[in-house]
Length: 103
Image 1 (cartoon, rainbow, N blue to C red):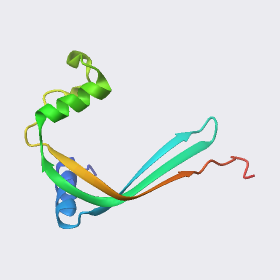
Image 2: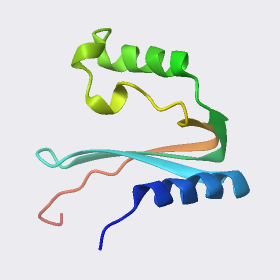
Image 3: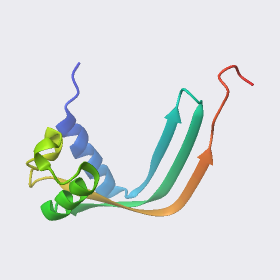
Image 4: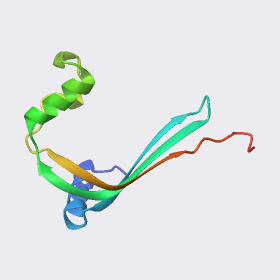
């Protein structure tokens, strides 16, 4: 069975438009040191029009100014793309490291 990502994205965008309350979780996990940092955000999201100039500024900030070496996913953006704006209402940051031996 294959997953049609276009339908997945359509569903995601519809869900955000109809129910903007959502959560984002970010986990930084290092299996070598067993260190786990978690940041959780709850808030509201909106679907915003795509702005190619903003996208290029963001890509340049994180990928560098040499567009020719960017991964192909970041080149030649589709004007039908959208931005998701997320406004956090609560933020939780936790250190959740563990010992693999169960101690």
